[in-house]
Length: 173
Image (cartoon, rainbow, N blue to C red):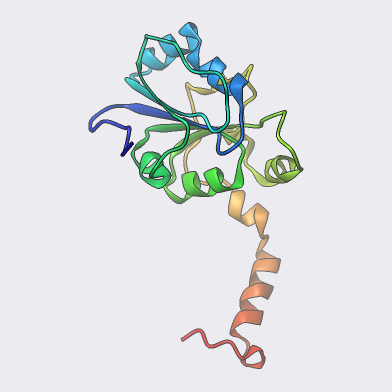
């Protein structure tokens, strides 16, 4: 399918990457959650399910369900709000477009990357499943302090110095 976000819609993109995060999809699909989205002016929800097995059933808002999105970047660009698992690729794409966003750590995710991202992510961007509905009223936008925390100024300056030093042999012109 092409871009599932209709022109002129006030849309929420719910994305779980390639994993499964049924509890996030189920939470956004709850009728009271959908009513809150509607109250806030949203008209459409696009779900990207990954390997999840729960398919949304709500009829409050217009819903599109995709296993994977053909043009994820375009969907992020057009969404008014992104609700996402805490995946590095999703986070970087959302921050690249400075979208209103809420990241929900997936308790079933393998590996430690979510904990590492949480350690540098501005907590205004983070919600649990229990606090997600409350966070809708004031989602964070931009990047917060993510990049400076990810690579603090001293380390960043050292990296730049290394790259532009004549001793490195790197030509940046």
